[in-house]
Length: 248
Image (cartoon, rainbow, N blue to C red; front, side, top):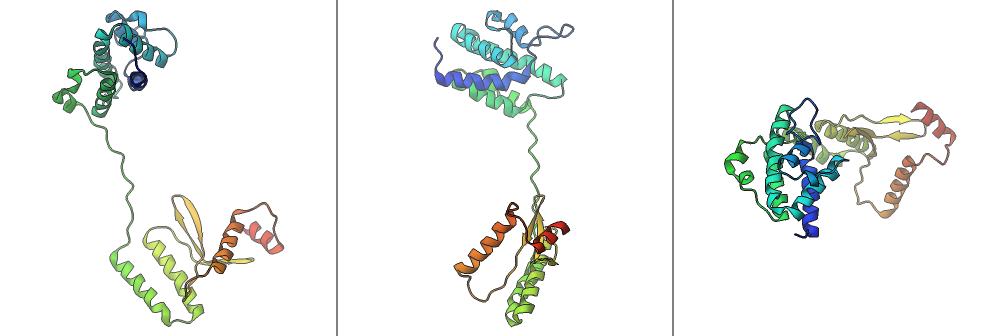
């Protein structure tokens, strides 16, 4: 039978899925049947199993069996799984339910169905993959957020300089409430850093400003230039800048 492009693609994926189920050829002192070569020999398909790299050999075995002995295709896959369960169990890496479900879908795409591998009792007997632990998000308590919100509301009664300092302090408390390891403002030669916090292993510098009116394009362009300056280290330094760099 001819093999369509769709079937060929499914066979390639199936070969990759089955790759770890068995060794290429048996160890001299191991069970000779527990290998891809052993399966091919026992099913009289050895003429389709070529020497060389393992993945191309598996792919060729599946492809030529489908082309020339399609009546043996399901038996071939089933026997690989059967012996693979023994091999992987002995290695402490049992075949998982998700693997067989994926395998069944690939075999279906080739145009077959293996009833033994669809059996609900068999599928339920297989261990499932343990889901990856999700990173636990850190959420500030409602009491802390309410307090910070009340502080922000009170900023309107403060003078500009006091308001700026209070805003820096509020941001530090806010980042601390979410375990971002914040640092307060520091003054260095040539500049002031309003603060910093850590996220995903990176440290971010913070620029804090409190304005009573909406910000126009001018200050935003000025801030953008300031940020761009932080990212560029190829233009040399002024004297204060050189002193700042040495201190870092």
